Image (tube, rainbow, N blue to C red):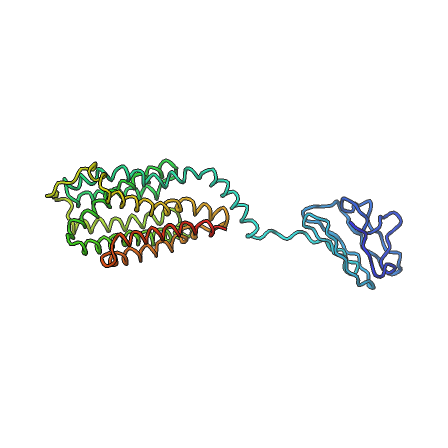
Length: 371
């Protein structure tokens, strides 16, 4: 240590002739062979400093007291240990214990390294549902023309219920991947049959637009509740809790379908469906499919990347990962119910163009917001 400077050096207790001077630079703590002995002042006995072997974890030292010196010195030897000399009283303060906030970045760092290695697998897990749904959708459409809409909708409910139960009890990546793919099949049956049923029931153009908006509003409601609800339940209850509750709600939906739609009755459509190749040549269908593709691509990119980025850079708790999608869900819920009515007044093409413009501007704002 550097040699301390005292205002009244003559009043400090003097060590014996064989003891080293206080404040000399030594790499180790005082040993028993270099203890400070009794002071030369009569009537005052200086306590012995360092009566045992040094202990690094919990050092114990006696005090050297002077009744006259009021000078304070602070020495910092390193490794978080602070030495104070106040009124010739030597106090060695051990480093403070680490707080929980200091320990958390280490766990976040471990999660960051793990997520960097699992980034591709997380993306494939999210993409499996959309890929399977893309492959199954062309076959569900002709199937509804043959057997009607009610039976495919009920089949979609059964498949979704099974996939939800699998999510609740899956413990490996393979089971999660299979459950996610199965979810895509169930979603294909439910969405294609449901929207087709609305189109056949509501023949009026304005009524069909409003009905489609309400149906897509239900989809937005599921996204609105699903992401925050799932993340909060996962954080405070457990992984299986949100899926079990969702499975119970799916059973309730299946009971409503049995009572109202009666899916046991097969009622094929009277109008023969248009071949798929003919539909792919229609420019209106291609423009609509392209706009839906690019509009959903932004959300599809954010779903696997935003939670990983939040964990790596912000050490966000689990409940915040789903709440981050809450603004998008609220705006989607408002937009589906609002533009379903406005499209009849201002034109569907204008609504689509405004929507694509807003999506493009929002995606451009994602990168600056990350800084």
